[in-house]
Image (cartoon, rainbow, N blue to C red):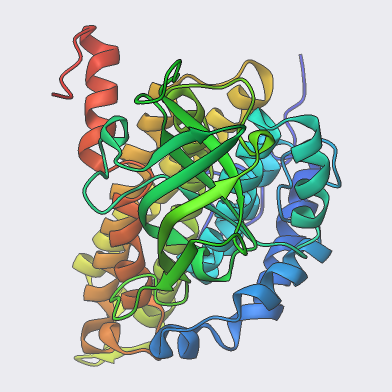
Length: 401
């Protein structure tokens, strides 16, 4: 009979189901490294960045690149070639600091670099990926438009042929890293062109005449993140700027699946930070002559939050193992984002109730994370769209229109 390993002497309050036992030592080392790097670079300043609505994104990109975090799950071209689980664990640690910090890394690595890595020509890969992996070049991903969010097939941005060149005209909205980017992956409709093949992806250096990027201000969420509107006013590109093979929505949606995978992990980092803040506060805060933790209602809240966090992490780990072994189907990614973001938001909101009025103070991270997750709930597919993806997988009936 196989002898069971010795049981832990005491429970980790943030890992009651011993999720760590399912991780390799190498995975734990990656997690510890990202936790230290993100804390050293951001922890002392993140509350101020959020309050001021600013973030030193280019400087952070250079540091994250130096530590191999940009495109860390991609192979070759200066990328670290780590596993999907490694990347997921990194997203948890980055978002435990702030969703904006994780967005900086995931937009660079999963969207901009991911698109070039999956669909770019060899020349495009060699030109851009090594410098992006090093953080020397910042990228953005232009898909969403002012009038077309969940329906990218109806995009208005057009690419027309002019001799051997392509000329792009249109607008993109809510573009992370947009106003600091050196290169933009822009998706445009070529249907109107003779022989046009629908939606195509283009690699656009942002110093190209006609390209503009304007930072969006007055956000109440993701304030420690650069968000921009892109304008393309007759942007002329050479023939080799287009992704050579991919056409239609397969291209951008494949990139979004990569980003969604990191998000379904990352949001749990925000939830973990809020849960730990609430747990610690409940032990230290005294009311009616005893700590808040001594009240049954408080323990009920903590138990519910802890359970949902552990379940979300188990789901994320399962999907990560699948991704590393056989790959993921779109509906599997949707299940992860649909569940984990909603549960993370609920954990943040419930944590706020334990902190009472202090929960809305910038001295605590809870309201900042809750506000950020309102954006995370919407971007890379709204909760409604993911519900429809899951619904179609369940019934075989598409209900998007």
